[in-house]
Image 1 (cartoon, rainbow, N blue to C red):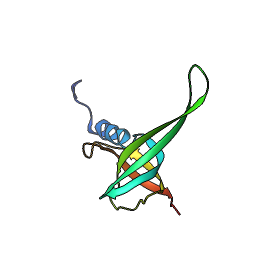
Image 2 (tube, one colour; image 1 turned 30 degrees about the horizontal axis):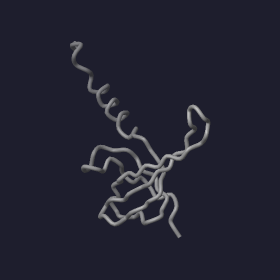
Image 3 (cartoon, rainbow, N blue to C red; image 1 turned 45 degrees about the vertical axis):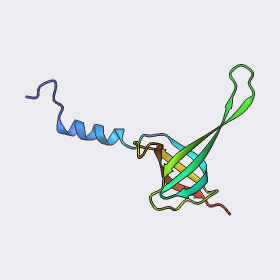
Image 4 (cartoon, rainbow, N blue to C red; image 1 turned 30 degrees about the vertical axis):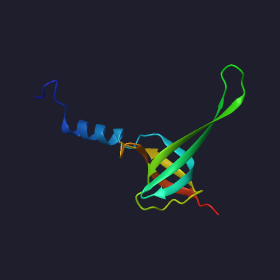
Length: 101
């Protein structure tokens, strides 16, 4: 008989796999590739002003980890949220969507 504080092993394993990989995913453009294994990705978001209804642009820059150094300046990339990798890096490069010309 299991006590209320213990969980079965099968329930614990399904919980672990369902929680992993559910981070945010955003698409942006690489604006800097001067660091080793790190890319600065600029993400632009269009939102509607609550009071005036005007569409406004919000831009954020994220430091993303690029293990293979495959993304270059101007590439359109998909990045996914991850655990903290350094003081500024909280994102990982998932794939390069479009290459820059």
